[in-house]
Image 1 (cartoon, rainbow, N blue to C red):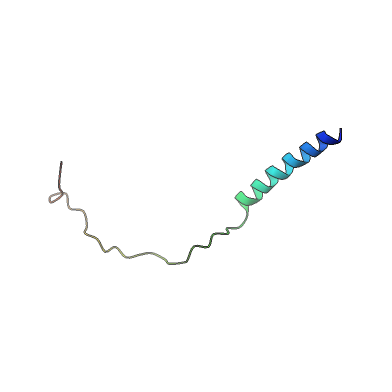
Image 2 (spheres, rainbow, N blue to C red; image 1 turned 90 degrees about the horizontal axis):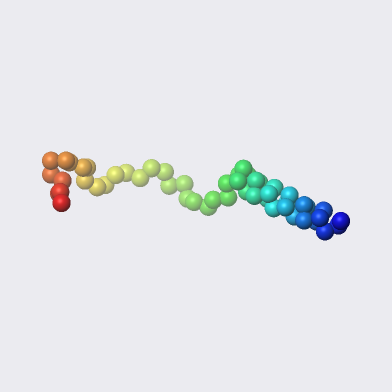
Length: 51
């Protein structure tokens, strides 16, 4: 009987840890760099190379 309650406790802990990770605050360490300016050439259909 103790084994069944331990299995249920492990399953509950596993699911609750996953939910906390999904719905918890972000832990991303990305730098806040903002929007980057476009430095390329704009697309022009008239001069575009075709196959």
